[in-house]
Length: 603
Image (cartoon, rainbow, N blue to C red):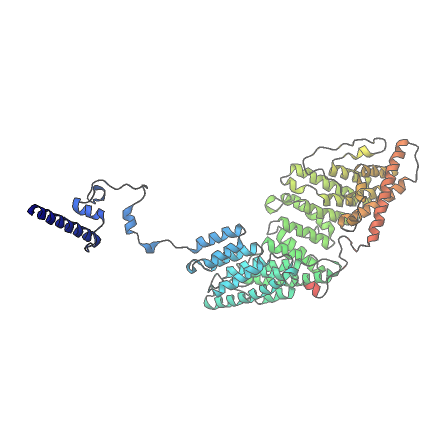
């Protein structure tokens, strides 16, 4: 009984312990938060060797150039910020890649410290080069709104870009913007002159491009208003750039039948401007007359009356040393250039003094290279000489023109600037016209041979070849004759009144398959151009040539075969003439039948 009671007490005690353990697990007592395990291990065992600063083994980094001490001592205030030069380079790259809109957004989103007037000038010039004229002016307004004052360079950039506009009738608003820019430039100049009269910002160079804008719009009175608004002397007065731009504007007058009064008025203004420039030259020792100014003055005076033309020749003698045979010799002060010699030759032809053109050519050939000798000649100069020879009366015009062509071809091979002296189609056309006027068939065939490489002898009576010879030349030297030159060739044969010459010309026409020029559709005929005009003249010459040859019959069977082909060509040419006459075109080459008047002339 006692043993049983003890067992019950043991069982009861174990049950109470089990309950207490479960209760303790269900309701644990609150404990303090423990540190992370790696900190408790460091407190118990100490730091590891890799984290011990006193360890003798140094740290190894991936880069050999990395210095942790320099990184710790680095001041964050010394970091490199975006500077204007870097921003300008980025904008220039975007503009060169034709990403104008991206460049504008980049500029507007860039920090204010990275922007200045030069940066805005860069983006404005990029827009002007891309012909975004309206956007460039809007950026100019934006620049001022953001507090950046435009400099002289800003106005020069704007005027230069606007002066590149070719058709002002489609950019009428930009002319108003140019005038507004000029007013702002005047205020800028007055402000700079008030604060610092010796500032390099005081210059009239930007006005050269503005004067060109006014000249392109035929606003000659405003050009002189701009000139008179400048100071007479000192910094900011008119310089050689301004005078050159004014003479160029007066020289670039319109052409046409009713333009003669404008030419005379502009030439008279150019004479007055030259006299004013000579007075300014005495007041300003730094002002020097250069080749560009003299060339522009000669071009502006060349289409005037006798007094203006005499002044132009006096300028040629004084500055370039080219004199007439009766005038005293002159050494000149400025070497000749390509443009100046071209202006001098055009002066001779425009004034009707054609003999002086040939005289000046001989003087240029004898000049040394330092003064602008034979090395500056090109086919444009020789074309003016051919025009002078063609305008001079005399029986030897065709021979002299042929000699000029042969000299050009010789110098092409032996001269230093040979490729520049190679005759072009204009050269051969002028020479062939001289042959037509003199009725000199021999020179005409020689010019045809030199131009095309064919042998005209293969088209003569008695030596007709089924396959005419053609010389093998370098590319660009064998030229195919256009309708204008072929017309002169046929007319020369007719003027010689030799049926053998006319037959030779018709064989050339037949071999070159000129008949294809007359087989045109109605749509093509309606497009009247210079080419179709001279094609019509060639058709008329062929009809006359076939009619002239058919007046005398021949018993040769070969002649009858040729005559049949020539008559077919003449019939096609006659039909082409009728079709062209039905068009009733107002086209006249080298002339303008309708001259703009009133508001139309201002565009």
